[in-house]
Length: 167
Image (cartoon, rainbow, N blue to C red; front, side, top):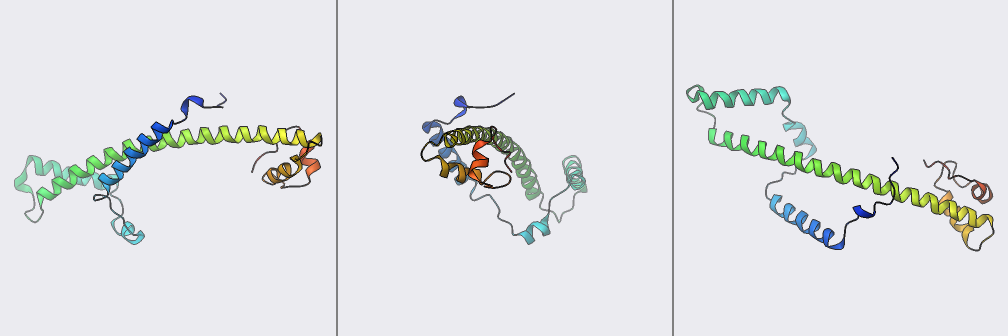
């Protein structure tokens, strides 16, 4: 199914303003909560893998069902707060990732639309150059340099009936 001209998917100025306002509010709300780890710190703390999540969940289950078996050396209030915050962050990350994926996909479609229109315009410029229309030689040379083989000559580029394959 070809995708071209996504007229109904463009953002109005009001929508852009609303989205930027919302993103600014989100950044402001998260600023005191986010962490900026160095590469060394990321390596040191790493990520809790699935096996270790099972350990955390099992310890929490024991704490909830049989607190007398829990170590007195653990701050269980902090443990619970960390557990709840981690769950909240995971859900938030999943929701944001879904939005990021959707925005990325929309961008891909708009990029494709721009590229197809650019190829059409380049074909038009090659046609106009082949008729010796004034001003198209430079455009054909400038745009043609981005196609496989580079700018191998204006005449060869301009007489092609199909757009060259982009790199």
